[in-house]
Image (cartoon, rainbow, N blue to C red; front, top):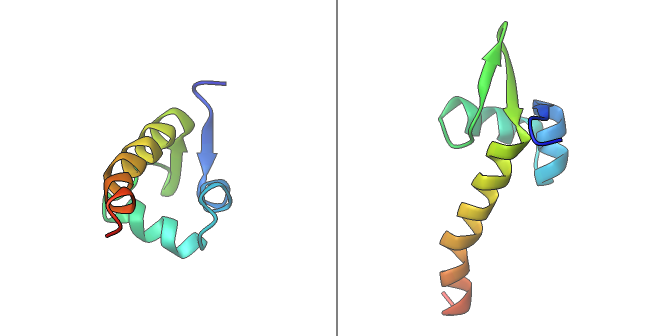
Length: 66
């Protein structure tokens, strides 16, 4: 489902990090997110793109041994 909307808890499980980490990243603009009546929501499509960007950025460091 390309327009799937995820909750903060679902994103934490997806990324295998603490819920507080996802909350902080969303609040600081580190993750693509939006609020619905004060609760964070995330489009799966946006998260998939964000993950690919993170892989590209950190991939060079891993390949170079840094």
